[in-house]
Length: 312
Ligand code: 13P
Ligand code: SF4
Picture 1 (tube, rainbow, N blue to C red):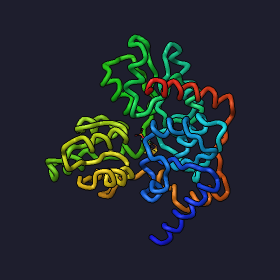
Picture 2 (cartoon, rainbow, N blue to C red):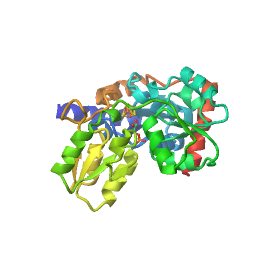
Picture 3 (tube, helix red, strand yellow):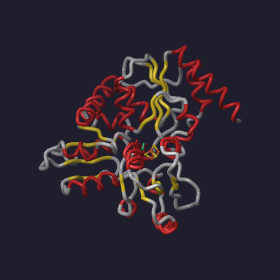
C-alpha cells in the first residue's frame, strides 16, 4: 500500500506539471492527500489563496462548498473537485430557499454567514466569515446594527458571547462532526493528562468550548499549540489536523478527543472521501469541474470579498 501511495503521489506531481494545476487542501483531508497539496490551510487561508493563485487550474481537495468558494473567487480558472459529493453537514443544514424565507423575516438585519455555506446562501449574505475572522467580521459591523448569523448556531452564539451583543439572530444549524464530541470523555482525558491544554474548534457546543484553554479555527489552534509552552494537548476538532500538528511540533504530544459513540478519533466522513486515487482521476480527466450561474457567483463574490477586506 505504501508503494501504491508513492506511485500515486508521483503520478499526481507529474499531472500537476502537465496541466499547470495547483492543489489546495484543507487540514481535515487524509494525511496522504495533505502531502500532495501545494497549499494546505484552514478555510480562510484557502479562500485567500484561491483568489490570489495564478495557475490556470485549481484542484480543491476538500468538501464541495470549499471548491465552490474557489470558483467564486477565480471565475477564469478551471476549478476541479475530485469528489463533488463530498458535502458538509453544516452547509447542508442551511438550504438557500429556506434561508431566503428566514432572512425576509428580518429585513433590517445584516447577514453574516460562515463560509461553510452553499453559493446560494453566500449570494444572500452581506459578509462571509470563517472561524478565523468571525469576531473581526462581526466587530466590523456597527454595534447597533442587528445581525443574522448563519448557519452555525455554535459559532454564532460563541461570537455573541465574545462581543456581548444581544442583537444577533442565529440560524439553527450545526456541524455533525463537532456536535459529536463528548464532554465526559474530554473531562476524563483532562484527568488522565492533567498538564494538557484543551484546544477546541468553536463549531463545538458551548459546554465543550467552556472547558477550552483555547478556542479557535484550525489555523488558530495550530498556532496556539506552537506558541504555548505546554507539551500536551487534548485536541477537540476533526482528527485530520493531527497530521499537521505532529509534523510541525514533533516533540509535543497530541491527544485526539473521541466522539460520543466510540473511543476512536472524530472524523469528517466527507473530508475522508478525498483520496489520492480520486485526485489522479480528476487531474487525468480534468473533471469534475465546478460551474455556477454567473449572477449567483457575482452576488456570492461580493460577500466573500467583503470578508477578505476585513481580514486584510
Ligand atoms: P476552519 O478551516 O475555518 O477552521 O473550519 C473548519 C471546518 O469545519 C471546515 O469545514
Ligand atoms: Fe462540514 Fe463539519 Fe466536515 Fe467541516 S467538519 S466540512 S463543518 S461537516
